Amino acid sequence: MSIASTIQRSQVDLQDFVDWSGVECLNQNSGHSLINALKQGYRDDDGLHLESDADEQLLIYIPFTQVVKLHSILFVGPEEEGPRTVKLFANKEHMGFSNVNDYLPSDSAILSEENLKGKPIVLKYVKFQNVRSLTIFVEDNQGSAETSKVQKIILYGTTVETTNVKDLKKIEEH
Amino acid sequence: MVLESTMICIDNSEWMRNGDYSPSRFQAQTDAVNLICGAKTQSNPENTVGIMTMAGKGVRVLVTPTSDLGKILGCMHGLEVGGEMNLTAGIQVAQLALKHRQNKKQQQRIIVFAGSPIKYEKKTLEAIGRKLKKNSVALDIIDFGEEEDGKPEKLEALLSAVNNNSSSHIVHVPPGPNALSDVLISTPIFTGDGDGGSGFAAAAAAAAAGGMSGFDFGVDPNLDPELALALRLSMEEERARQEAAAKKAAEDATKQDKSGEQAADAVISEAGGSNSSLPIEKNVDVMDDESALLQQAIAMSVDNPDASQSTGIADANMSDADDQDLAIALQMSVEDSGKDLSAQTEMNKVLGDQSFMSSILASLPGVDPNDPSVKDLIASLQGQPEDKKKEDNQDNKEEKQ
Image (cartoon, rainbow over all chains, first blue to last red; front, side, top):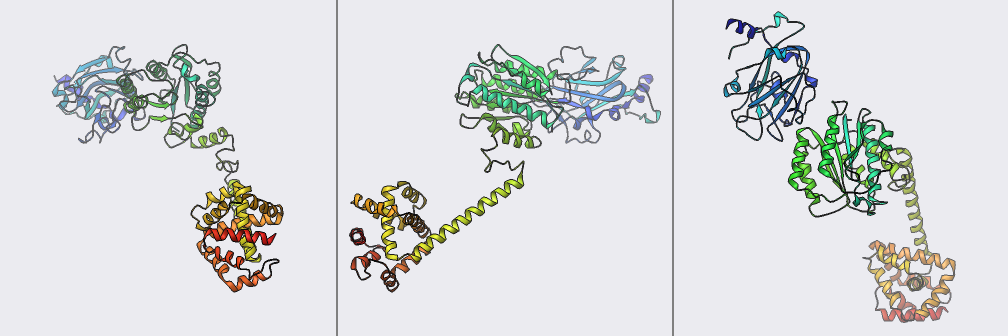
């Protein structure tokens, strides 16, 4: 357990390594964009959230400024409209809804209510050793609502090239 | 200046043979497509445009999105009209073509020319629209050609399903004298949501309109504003000068000529005008409907039963060039006096002033100021019964002869 918690503690919020110019989200409602869920300051504001538009699916594309290792991911969302089935793809550029089913996801998870309250989902670390970009596909939501809403998305991991020990912050256990 | 990749879907179905858009629907469409391609490539050099057909041999991509304008325009040659348009397949193929664009940073846009009737249900179209919106593809629809019931509604439904932040537009172009391209130039499809493209649009308007039509002096105000302004000012000045000159001539005519003769001449010229030159009368009629004096004068000339007599005299009068000019000037003065009530009353005052009238009449050759008929004639100008006027008219003419 301690080893696990040590690993947890050395993980960094990868928010600093996100290449914001390339961040994209398909099927987002223009009033409720990805920035609301991803960016520091915005995501902590409970009034702001990411919402889908035409239907309940979302395709989020996050490129990084350098290669990272992804350890875990955290979603916060409302009970009904929060995401349920989530698929993650590492290093797949410019995916569309049409070809999202053509590729095997690097990892997939079905979120529970606990997860939506803030429990991070630990990923298959071995699959995310060399991540340049991450694609998150929200397939459906908890209550089969018309649109999906996400309050927060936090990515935990480390960088490959440099791991600045001073940057390591203690991450609270939820 | 939005970085965009556009797919233009051309309708080359049988319905495009129709000539209600000159020279034919298909030709009008081709012109519009050429203009759009030019506008897109000009607004941003990195923009790409692709062309595909929806009918004819089938849904075919003629050229994949490229920024090479020559290639785009060249592929339109030799296109044949025929078959039926397949809207759903066309849009799907366009979407696929855009998905495989080289520069993923470009925004995706599809422009559809919907000329033939739409055989799909609203629901099908809405589903397609939602799919486009989900993949953040904007859609511009040009509704022209066939006008069937429900077509505009179906296309509007499709637009509202796709529309995200007013990035998609629809234009309905009814058949008419204006070319399809001219109508499109002023729409957001060309102007690119307000910013950019407007400079090109203005230049295109000048080129497309042939330079002359649409611009007053054959000079595009956008291209040469100073010249256009100078031409406009000089035209206005000339107009003002001419009006002033005409007014002055009319005034001189009314003042210097003996009023009696003037009255007679006015009546005769009116009669002559009504009989020998209808356009003048009509012109007068049209321009000054409310003028009571004018109505009266025309009624007088129209009521004149002896057309031959008046014509003869009118001809005798009209043959004299001076008199003709005088007649025209008098006509104008009558109009002017009709327009301006104060002027009218002034003239009446002048005519009514007996002493003045008699002194003027005295200088008239062959007109006896004390002649009761002449006196009656003068009085008639102030609204005496027409019968008396007629008599006076005849008497006066005989006297003159």
